[in-house]
Length: 72
Image 1: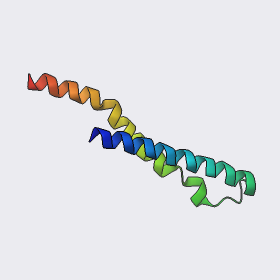
Image 2 (image 1 turned 90 degrees about the horizontal axis):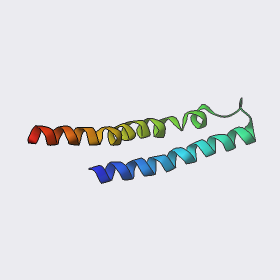
Image 3 (image 1 turned 90 degrees about the vertical axis):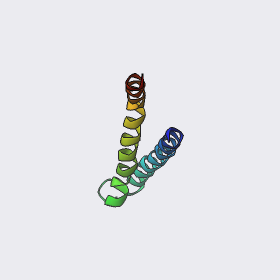
């Protein structure tokens, strides 16, 4: 499970980076006012996924420590 979350986080970060780059390119070519909302808000989905997977990885050592103390 941990390997899947780390891999998912890594690939999601790449997708987030690409959507942010696409956003800046679209704004550069079309101007801020004419960029479609789909392009503007496209980085939000990967960002929220990164938030949840990052929080999971951050708190995982604390959960493991707690499980180890309960088991002994």
